[in-house]
Amino acid sequence: MTGKHAPLNSRGPVSPPFGEAMLEFIDAVHGSLDLAKLGTYYMESIPRLVRANAYGFYLFSPDAQDLVRVAVQGGVERYVKRYEQYAFRYDPLLRYLVDEQRPVCETQLFTEQEWQQQPLRKALTMRRLVRMLEVPIITDGRPVGTLFFTRRPDEAPFIEPDMRVMRTISLHVTAAVKNALDYQRIHDQQSAAEGVLQVIGAALILTDSLGDIRFANRQAEEFLVFCGDKGAQRDRLRRALRDNVNQLFNAGISTAVSVVQAAPSQPGVAAGAILLRSVRVPGSDGTVATFICSHSSGGLQMEHLASFLPQRVLEVLELVAEGHANKEIARRLFISENTVKYHLKRLFQTFEATSRSDLLAKALAYRPGDTTPLLPSDTQERIII
Image 1 (cartoon, rainbow, N blue to C red):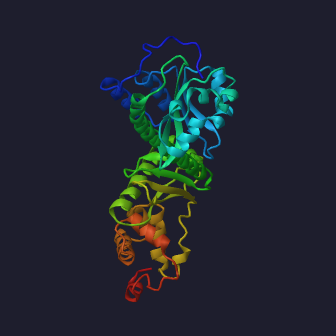
Image 2 (cartoon, rainbow, N blue to C red):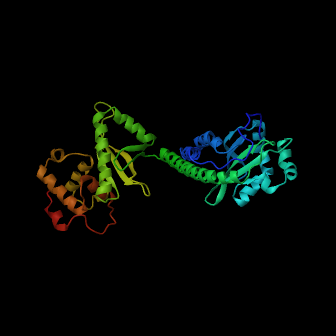
Image 3 (cartoon, one colour):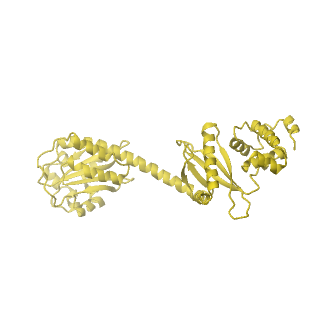
């Protein structure tokens, strides 16, 4: 698989390289988690370590039926393509490499005459087979690819010093490939997950443990664009996200809920409420998923609590869910702020809540099947309706 190239510096065997060349090679192959870039870095640095006319870097397809080119340098393209398409199936060195999982050159398996009679020669339609050395890339105990090197027929064959160099090269390329494949797998999984998140009906935001947005699906992006034109709502949303995250990480709760008053979409139209429900993503390092649900100006529906809470207490809770302060709740219900505080105190005690977000989360999660009464009977009698 060689063509017309500049002559090599020496026709003799190569001694194992030490020092700067090997260190630069190691630094290069570990310099990227992208396979294409890894191949480029490999080809830029490998000629200083191995004397050859052509270099190849391949991975096997998942079913091991095809070669996947990472990088090739120095070979005559028509021979390289022929090898990649079908001639590799006649390559005895590749079969040996897969079975034995160690470097191999043609002189280890054949005499010169036997080597020239190999079916690989006919498959490549070459007059003479070149000197070849192939090195396995092994991850998780199985070969996943190969490195190959060729010399012209009039060059010295690969010998043991070349093998020693190859073992070192193989170790580092194998580690770099494993890291790149693991990264690719994670990236593919993340891309697939994001594809699923994109088609979820609800608007979804993923944040880190500080509340900074890392991902938003299409519905959430539309909402964020809308908020971007309304500074006050954008600020409220940001505060609510951070408050939910703080609740999840500091209060030991499983769900955090905040309500942001929505800006009207048109002048004169009453604003509704935006509910942010946040949960920690299992198995992640601090990722929080927040679902955004809009509610009409009538507030969040708490009918599931109607048979357990007095009407006035339920009204206070619903106004809290809409994001109103105590003063506004008092004005709307025609009661004093002290009465609002009293109702809230009992609600906090009943749900064992530590904040308004915690109160909303626990109230929304409560279902009639729970056996414990929401409020002690004596408290229900004393509440001013």
